[in-house]
Structures are given as structure tokens and as C-alpha cells.
Image (cartoon, rainbow, N blue to C red; front, side, top):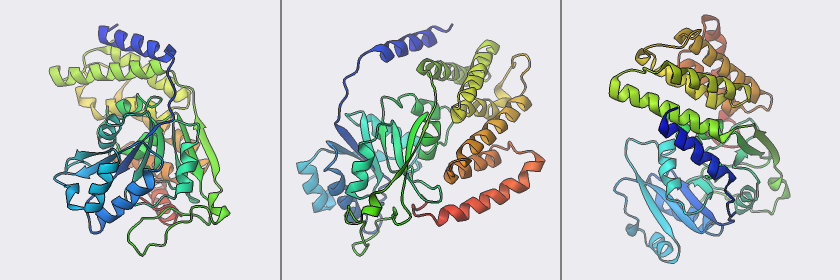
Length: 364
């Protein structure tokens, strides 16, 4: 076994058995600030709202933005811990890479994150931060959710970001797909989460209407061995290094090991983790020197198609249409459809798009 892989697994095992002090202190993250018209005013409102619940705020900002131009923001900075983390012009405000930089800047493991321009009432924040779950957010009546609003435990999810960084272009929707422990609080039909766009916006009630505080919890949890995650990440990193340094993947044994892990994750219901392995090979098929016996790129692609369809079926039982929309788009964009799939997938994507656009949680 590769020495670095062995070390990672041993360290992960030690971390799992190490007794960790639980902390109720929370870091706050504000995502997506883009310095548009009235942007500073909306950001200031969000800061004032969130600082009642967190010990510090980490704010994602575009390059070359200076908060000192806004006196209100300057006053908040003097009385409360606020850190600004720049993102490049090439980065999506809601990419996994941007979120990774922000969460690394947080002192505490518990993180409340929101997009700067969506209003979330104090009662909703309170509901999020009392949940016993490593990742949670709100769900609309039609199955949509905002991945930029949630409560996150970076200790429990410490390997998920690393998994998502293996294949480029991931966003916060993927963070929810890869998590093996997540909770959705379904809003009532009388409630909503909308953009907080101006002074004239009618704000949500913080509790005057009891119907607005009723949520139906929907939890998804599956068995997952952290050492399997570490082994997966380490093996794929070695294969990525081979591609970078040698131009191809040479180790049939390592490929075999990681493909077996994909089957294991799939069988335990961790469909999206399993799919990341297959996507890696599909995306780098020209770099594979030798595949193990009984494997081919066509077999890997077919297994990937099966994993995505199984994931879609899993979420369809609870009408999580945003996930189904993302999954069907993966089938399209990664060219995993059979000829018989093309028509019904295109029709279903169109249908889901219309449903999600009418939900009481706005689309990102």
C-alpha cells in the first residue's frame, strides 16, 4: 500500500476515536455578495441579522471591493469580528472552491451560511441551528432548495469538500448531494424564501404567523466509513499525480481498488460519492493505460448511468425535484444517455424546470 495512503488512513482512524469537545459557538458565512446596486445596504442588513446568532462573520467579496466606502459596514467591523475573503472574477460565487476558502477561515466547526441577498427570518435561523444534523437547509413545496442557505458541521463533513474537488466545476448543490447526513425542513405553503432586494421589500414575519413556523423534516442518512472516504481520496490523488507527471494512469491495482470502493458506496446508498469515482475515469479515459480485468470504459459509463438513475429514483420518492433536475442534467452533460433516454430526459428536464421556477423557494 502506498505510504501516504497508509498514513492518511491511520490518521483518520485516530481522529475518529479521539474525544472531541463539542462547541455551541457558531461561525457565519455570507455568500455571493456582488457589489451591485443597493448591494452594500442589503449586505449590511444581513450582517445585522446574522450577528445575533454567530461569533464571527466571514464574507465572500469580489476582487478589489473596499468596505470602507460604506460607513454602516465600517461601524459593524469595529464592533464585531468580520473577515472578508476575496474570490477571483473567474470563480462562481457559489462554487465549492469558494466555499472551501470561506469555511477554512472559520474558527468554529458549526457554520451558518446564507446568501447575502436572500431574506431569512430570525425564526428560520433559530430552527436551522438547533438541528442535530451535519448539513441542513429549507425545502420548498415543489422540491426546490437554496444551497446557499444552510447549517453545516465542517468536522463531520471534513472529507466531502475533498471529494468534490477531485472533479472540477462543483457547486454547493453538489455539497448536498455528496453528504451522507442531511436534513431538509419543508416550508408550509404559506411561507417562502425570496430575494431581499430593496428597502420596499415586505419582510418575512419572525413569528407573528404561527403557520410560517411549521416545518416538515425530511432526513437522509446512510452508512459511511470515513476510512473508505480517505482511501478513495488518496487513491484518486495518486492517479491524478500520475496523469500530471507521467501523462497516464499506470497502476491497474489502484484503479481496481477505487472501482471496488465505487461499488461499495453505491451499495450503501451513497450514490453521488460512488459516481465521483466513475466520473473521474470517464473524464480521463484517454489517460488510462490499462483497466482491470472485466472493466472497460463502456462498462464504467454504463455503471455511471445506472448510479445516476438510481439516485434520481431515490429522491423522487420524496419529491426532491431539484436533485432530480441536477441528476438528469448530469446524464446529459456527461453523455451517459442511451438513445432511448434522450426524449424522456429532455421532456423531464423541461417539466422540472417549470415546476422549480414556481416554487415558494426561489431558484439560485
